[in-house]
Image (cartoon, rainbow, N blue to C red; front, side, top):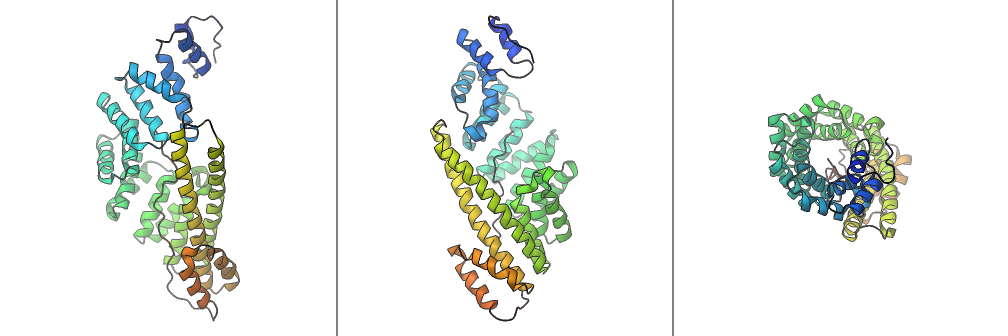
Length: 357
């Protein structure tokens, strides 16, 4: 890493500050001494954009605005703006800047991918499928991502054969937690249970970020239920419970820190608080649903000692009152093996995080 001595001419300081790693303090000094040197604003913004998902990009908007005002025809500038907007959760604005980037550089692969993701979050599924198809047709370097996002949208449309074909192509090109999780979900829906189990277990691997993959754990429970392996399903739902508990604790801590942080951009802060609150509410619902499913399946296997305390956990969610009352009646007598269904299959809101490119 090169030092930049005091008194270094602005142009030389700029080059040194952007050569190895970006030195934002040096670039801020360049801007202060030569306000017209807007190029430095663009590079100052880049590290802040990379952290914007958590910080909201404190102080980065003026830098981005200055860069865009001076260089509106630079795909590097428009793409950084799109990336920022996506990280802070403004997908409509992100889409605008992805479109501008692609108008300037039609084969900008990251912008193409970011556009497909933004369209997915905006629930413009047909357009997202078209955007991913364009990437697949020209075989971009990140084509496995295109197959993943097209599969995600096709699955949302309940076109299982097409979604399966795409996720199989994605698996052949790359191994990520996202890909194996979605593959397992699609395979479960197609009753290809052996393959689904392998993919969902792969999605749980720590090296793929699977320690907190609650969706994979939930679907492993559903796979066990389809096989009528009640005890096996119950264990997976218990695992999902633990996962949701860990996730909710982390989200709760982040919500508290966000609420107390007076330095955050107000618009970003309000949007993040809303998202975190909704995620915690959904996580609580899934936690209690997983408790019920575990209790239900332990009961089906005759293990009432395990079923009863889990049922009391599920009973804390009023939305499950009818399910809980029915199971309480059933486990009052001798256990019966009967067809079981999960209390909730609503797991494919499957983006508990922001994808950024």
